[in-house]
Image (cartoon, rainbow, N blue to C red; front, side, top):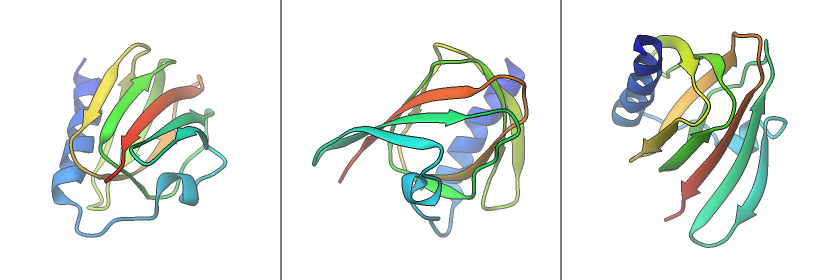
Length: 120
C-alpha cells in the first residue's frame, strides 16, 4: 500500500512541478504504446512494458489509467526523484494535469495498462 502511494505521489509531483515537458509518450516510445482509438477529444493507448524494459522520459495528457496486470515499476521524475512500487490489477489512476516521467519495469511480470488521455 505504501509503495503504491509512493508511485501515485510521484505522478502528482511531476504534474505539479515539471518545468518542461518531454516528448509525447507514443512518439518517444512507440514500441511500448499502441493507439487503440483516437478522435478530436480522446486518445486510448494500450501500454505494455516487459520485465527489464525502461522507457525514456515522456509526457502524458490528463486522463485515466487502468492497470490490467500487477507489476513492480520504478518511476523517475524530471526533478531526479525516483519512486518504486507495485501497481495492482484493477487500480485506476486519474491525472488532472500533464504528467512527465520515465518508467522501468523492475519486476518479473509484464506491465499492461490502458491509458485514456483527454485532448484540448
